[in-house]
Image 1 (cartoon, protein in one colour):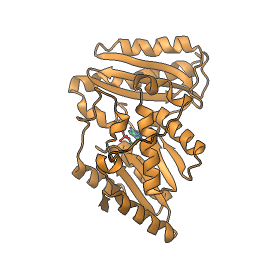
Image 2 (cartoon, helix red, strand yellow; image 1 turned 30 degrees about the vertical axis):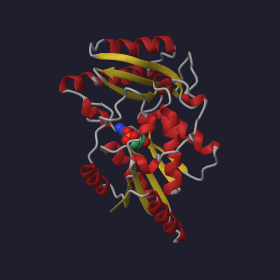
Image 3 (tube, rainbow, N blue to C red; image 1 turned 180 degrees about the vertical axis):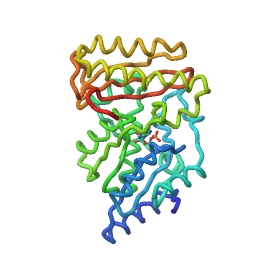
Length: 283
Ligand code: AMP
């Protein structure tokens, strides 16, 4: 497995691979890899000849006062996990390689980025779509894999890809959870043991909402109360947002159906965690 840090070298490798008739798959990540990332890599391995994962903590998707500086990083461990998961090449550019001085071009998806994480993290999705667009131009993937853990991000990437006619197939992958239900996340490493236990309330709220929906409750107001009550039982948890939205358009809704999304962002102490579930589906 190779580690490439230069954009020019990565583009040259991509050109050569395509010239030889090979397909390229990309799993974009910010590193500190876990089994959620590995599941994307395993699926990517089946879908292409050259499997690339990018590891880049993207400064433009972090707001002022967020955790860009302290975001966990461990290249040695990440390399071992990526290799184990069948990755051929890690693309790990420096921030100055991706954003040299003079950089001033951004990609902005409009309506889909307004609610949820877009509302609580202004500018976040502009950073995400810009870096993913750049990664697509650099790695030239035929297919790129993203997790449903970041449900809105996946919807935004699909929109960008369609709107800008990018020739990349986007694959959405199920949420991978710890055995106790906590969605895997690099940010889980911030949690103390007590916070780690408190963090289980996110999945508990989703599970309870699904159970209520499957028992016949379709009023979003009542489903919201049900999920909010579960978060409220946890003194260390503070809701950033808890919303039911159409799982395809992210539009607000007052009646739930099997495609309704429950999306939540909850602060556990200083750590903001997100999770989600579609009412009529499992992860
Ligand atoms: P990140 O490194 O957190 O930016 O995530 C990189 C990719 O891995 C994104 O497409 C995420 O949605 C995906 N991902 C992160 N955590 C999980 C998880 N628990 N299950 C599935 N995919 C995940």
